[in-house]
Amino acid sequence: MKTKILLGCLMATSALLATSCSDFLTEDPKGKLIPGEFYSNQEELNMSVYALYAEVQAFQCNSNPMIVQCQGDDVTSTTGSNKAAYLSADAYEVPSDTKGLDDNWKRLYTIIRAANMIIDNAASAATTQEEINIALGQAYYWRAFSYFSLVRIFGPLPINLHNTPDENKTPLSSVEDVYKRIVEDLTAAEDCNLPAKYTGDYRSVEGQNLYVSQQTVKATLAAVYMSMAGYPLNKSEYYGMAADKAKEVVDGVNNGTYDQSLLTDWNNVYSYGMNHHNETLLGIDFNATLGGWTDGDSQMSSCHQFATLDGGWGDFLPERRYWKNFPDGPRKDAIFAKQLLLTDHVNTVDWWATRDGQPYNGTNAVVTEYRPMFIAFTVNADAGGNPIAAAYDYTKPHWTGMCINKRHQLIRYSEVLCWFAESAARSGKYESEARTALKQVRQRAYADPAKVTEVDGLSGDALAEAAYMEHGYEVAGNVFAMVTRRADEFRMNRLKENYDYRTGEQGDVLVPAGTLTHSVDAAGVPFTYTLTQDLVLDEEMQVTTGWSDEGSIYQIYPPQETEKNPNLHR
Image (tube, rainbow, N blue to C red; front, top):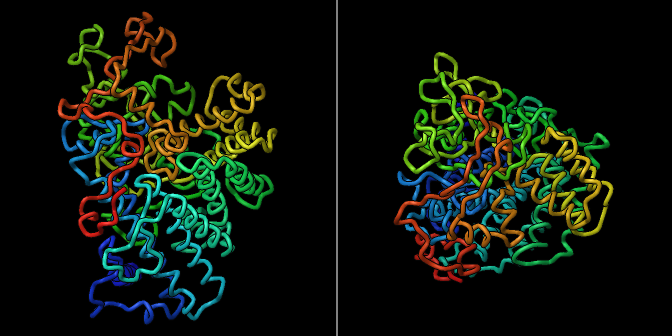
């Protein structure tokens, strides 16, 4: 009964959010809840926050809003099928299928409207100031998060702070002004003095926070300052501010104020058997405490699996070059399948295996996709086809259902350590602490101790670059991370390097025998693997236009929005 009541209230609250994304609030409110009449007590304030998180879940539940992440050098997609939008992002082309742009824009602006309602009305609730601050902190945070996501994809944006009718005439705010808004909101969230640790239903699960905490706000500010220090604002002084803010989180962990830490075993980071752990600062949960929203569950298990292996969708697949250059160790084995389990559910093969034992010629691969496979979101199944709550084992069948309550990890403590190390190195601050932070991340990721000790000998610039690369490895394939590999490359203005590689010859990249995890054939004889045709796009998807700087980096505004708001143009 409690679940039914909660769901009914959430549906009623969500009705307040059903509106166009550009014309912020224009529908006739007859028969709907009026904000001024709704926010009167603690229960209604809680329901407004639950409605906000329902929209956050909706943004995260499928892959469409994350299609732009194919611009990063870690992910590509399946050719053919319904992947035109993914491959357009991969090729830095204007997409003919705009589902990724539409869903990204629509869902993030819906989160913004839900946040606005809380910000404008929470103070009227008859409850304690502490509870009002908790609600406001969630709203300020997710509004900032949404604009932070949008500005790195579309550039200048229309700003909506109060859901007031705009007749589709809101002008664009510059990238710099959008970032000012983001910082103002995160600062407001920080001023709410949010708890470091939540308890109780809907705010925590299995001892881990569901609601945004004070350390999450600080970590996000660090990431935002780093973005402001890089492209396109290039205000390098913000690296020092990022280092200061990240250090607050690291110091809080070290002194016990925050209970975040690194898991000892990398294999547990994405394990379904440890769906909730204290390495996560910001995680999105599905079907955990907020009722039974089947359509709000994560679909990423299907998105990462190959289409030819038990019917995966193949939305996000690894680029071979990125896999080849990815450092060996426990982290690589936890992010990529060491081998691929065939459909007989008995035999495993190397992804580069060929049926005739000859070099790959485009048709002789044992596994059609002929590339490694991400397993971060993959879950095993038992004999009855039910998901197993354990770390993924590539030698056992994977669960083939579509939706599962797998937690998405948007910010992990390992990322904060990388952000601290990089921003400190780029600003010349906290040199000793920065090296210690990077060594913590490497200690778990590498089997070779020399990869840890070499940090002590790196120059400041080399330390910054090493931390930058390390963060990319930590989030490889995790298109739902707040700072993805694509976002890192965007900040460093290195996306054109991906374009140049994908539109160039992609010359054979020789991998010497002995450097691969499985570098011997079935007879135990060492072999040499040659990387060819890393990105095989459909013929109609081949890049035909040149690089146009911002025009290639930023996505076009969704056509259905530009039709309504003539200001949506650069």
